[in-house]
Image (tube, rainbow, N blue to C red; front, side):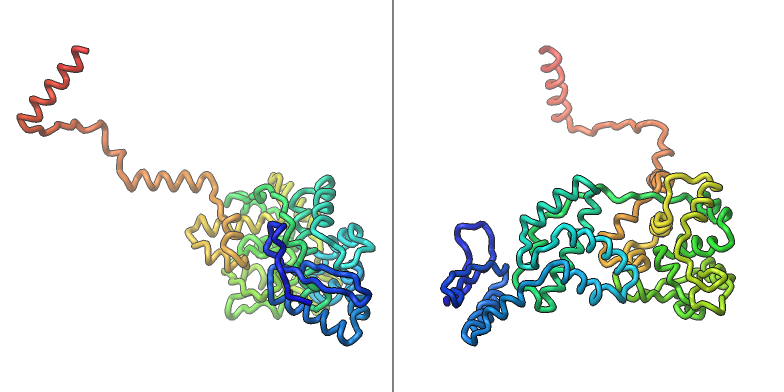
Length: 370
């Protein structure tokens, strides 16, 4: 059957395989950038044809996208609460877009068309989240041996997003907001602004997640699906100690009947209104934590670890400084240099040799006569 090859008529580095089906039809398939993967794919086809299993193997490769997407949710996402709800929305959109297509029938062109159609309805950021979900689905299909070849989403250019929304509160605003929170909301807000934790991470807290001896909060369910320990300062520790434990529930924040608190929008909006704070979301408290950490002189890598970011680039989006802080910084710079002590420019008296002085005077006279 030959060996894997690269197409000279195309400007790519992908490897292809070519073979004849039992009926004599020639098949040419693009596998991807790995020669080893292409060799393995060709070997699999050769063995299947030799053993008379080619048609059986081919029929197994025909997996409907919507069926595999459901399997992806059940197997890969179900045990991760925040991860599941996040992907569920995008899976529904993707299933509607690629309904009736098998995994091996979804090409780069199909995904580009999906992207362009979605851009007419939603923001570029939302489109990118759907593409990221689709990429994850194909990655799982490859790992589970349900799809051969390269992930087609890797060939699709992501949409250019606007700069992340950076909104945070000054110290006076934070104090005002906490003062206007209800008794139930106050420890939630205090925890958010002092740790940078996400709302979902806070509401999912159980009492066994809090180690008051070591002053740390252990997060098992995070956005990145990685365990993280967040240090508590005395303010957070005191606020959590004052929260009454409900014998009916393991959750730190729960209603009187023991049910976990899942929505605080109404009470949070009420607190914002009383504090005269506009254009602000709960997630912006995470911005507050990062910004004030940086303004206090904490290095970015430490801030990254506290927030649970995988890369320092993600932390840089939050590590902006307020205008007031910048003004104080340049004031310190001016005091350090000390130019305020100079009342006038010092008189500079050049020191010339007699020959240089004579040459200079002749040059001045020369140009004066022009």
